[in-house]
Length: 118
Image 1 (cartoon, helix red, strand yellow):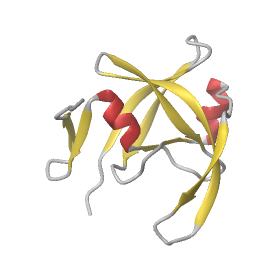
Image 2 (cartoon, one colour):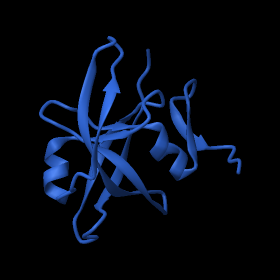
Image 3 (cartoon, one colour):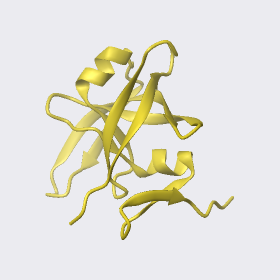
C-alpha cells in the first residue's frame, strides 16, 4: 500500500503569531486531522470537546478536539483537529481535505482539486 504525505502550515486559531510546519500522512479514510502532542503544546491549542474514535482494529480511543487554521498553496481554512497524545502521529483527514477543496488521488498519490458540490 502506498502512502502520501504533505507538509502544511498549522496556525493557532486564537493566536496567529503561533505557527509551525507539519508533515502529515494523508489519510482520506480518517474524518479528523490529528496533530502530534508537541504541535498542540507549541501552538497552545485548547480542547473544546472530547470524542470517541473507532480504530482499524475495532478498538476505541477518546481524544480531545480543538480548532486550528491550516495553510496550503495559498488557502487558509479553519478545521477541527484531534489533540494528539504521546505517540500519536500527524494525520490529515477528510474534513480538512474537503475544507481545502482537494481530494487524494490514490493512483498518483497526490492531492488534486475536488469536484465541489453545494
